[in-house]
Structures are given as structure tokens and as C-alpha cells.
Length: 377
Image 1 (cartoon, rainbow, N blue to C red):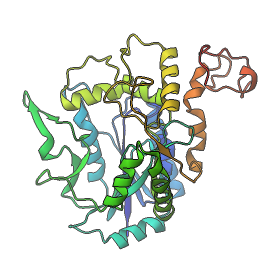
Image 2 (image 1 turned 60 degrees about the vertical axis):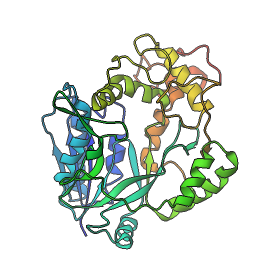
Image 3 (image 1 turned 90 degrees about the vertical axis):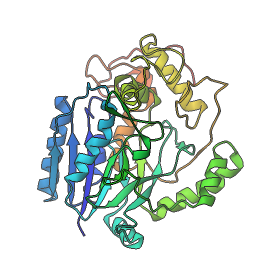
């Protein structure tokens, strides 16, 4: 059984993703890694080449970096998130494939994956398996309940399966392809029909009803938490760090994702539109962003920003606890990327972005001045 892992990269270093840790989490799982990289920052490209050398030398396995020409200034460039995934997938040679985003850590063993493939009996009629997803909300131990606890991550290498916009959600503006809301442009679809590929899921209707109740009804939380921990004991799972720091999530929207979503759906929102609260990214200061992020992390347990968050008014959601440690491979990254760390600047002496005892840099003991003076938990 040959298994390939694949992903995409777009300036992952500049964007602050744990991409090195994500890719390394596949090293002991797969026989081949394929990355479709459209980066223009040197550090991301260097890190990928270093990972390629490490994987091919230490593991004696193939690591391919595909670098297509992509026009990220195109009016509909949001569709390229799915199209670059399709390119990476197309270049895989394994019998079975694992797709991983570069803010995700794969937690599990090779034998667990093989057992799932065998028990799931992946074939043309059942070509895709879902895996559990644990998504922290901030760094205080909250695991989100308000999102689906699964993602389609293991699949049969069927040449008729690709990533893209389902046929039912395609629209055209001036002969350019865009998406209707309801897709992120990355669905697994059949090439010949554009229909979404069926997914073999471990979440029953009953469990999903319990989860939906647990979002706002605390009495359902223990039931859902017990089930979630039991399922992640038995199955490999994805540790998704997209919302580990709400502050960094804001920055990613400002730098890339806000424009990407607009271009995917053909929206006409201004480039500095801020989906987090009623102040544009041009108007908001660094201090305000950090303070707002800390409040959102503390006051909520998940909030999908289709509308601005208003403290004391926006709906509250519950969370569960994952009875497992942060995966070892990403512990240092998690420690370095907590929102509270950004209350301090880069150390002017050694460059470290951190804080220690008595406002001193933990690396060189230099005195630091706290950026945020007026925030108390």
C-alpha cells in the first residue's frame, strides 16, 4: 500500500503558518509528499527545499515541489486555492492520498491509517474518508464545538477526483469562474460531473444533533466531550491551528484571506474590509487588534465572522476539552504564537518575539516595554 501526502503553500512563512511542523507530521505516515507552492517569499521556498532534502535523505522517500505559474492578481484568484490543491493531488503517485492544510498537524500512526483504509474499504463507490478535527479556540485549552468535527482527508487516488467548485455552486461573471456561497472552492469533486464526492463519515446523525445542542446548551457539553475524546483515542485526527491566535487570524485576513474570499465569490467589499468588528483594517491600530483578539478569545469559544463580534451582544458558544497534550511536533510553535505574546514587541537586542519574567526578554534578558498598557484579563 503506497500512501501520498499533499498540500499547497502560498508564502507560508510570511503568513505565520506552522507549515514545517505540518509537513513533518506526515513524515512517518506517507511514502511520498507533494507540495504545490506558489510562494514569492524566499524563506518559504528555502524551508520547503530543506524539508525535501530531509525527507528524501532521512526517509529515503520522494518529496516533490510543484511550482505552477499563478496570477494572484486575477479578479477571481480565490479559485486558485482549490486549483492548486488539484495540481498537488494530480501529481501524487500513491494508491491512497492524505490531504493536509499547512495549519494542520496530522496526529496518528501509519498503522492507524492503514487500518482505516482497510476497514473503510475505499473504492470507486466509497472513495473518501473523514477524519476527526480538533480545532483550538485561542491557546487556553478550548476546543470548538461550533464547527463540524470532521474533514475529508483520506481518499482513493482516483484520476476522476479533483478539488474545485462543485457544479451546483459555480457562477460566471464576464466569462470568469466564481463561486456561490456554500463552498470554499476546494471541495473534492468528480471531474466529469462536478458533483461532490461522497464521504464516509464517522459522525452519526445523533452525535451531530448533540453537538448542535452543545453549541449553546451547556448540559450537552459533557456528552459531546466524552464522545469526541473517545473517537480521537481510536482514530488518527487533525489538530487544526487556524484559530490558535485570533490576532494572527486577523492579520491573515488583512494580508490575504479577505481579498481571497472576495475574489472567490465576486464580492465588491473594500480591500480593507474588516469582518471581525465595525472598523476597517486601515483605521484599526495594532493595539486595538491585540486587545480585541484577547477579548474574543476569552469571551467566546468560537465565532465564525460572517458578522462583526460585539462584546456582550454577539451569541456565546460553548467549548470542550481535548484530554490530550498539544502534539509534540508543534508545541514550540504554539508557545511562540499565543496572542498574549504580541502584547510585547520584538526584542530590539536579539529579535525574539516573546516576553518573560519582569518584562525581560527570556533569551537575552533585555528589558522590554509592553505594547499594550491598558489591557487586563
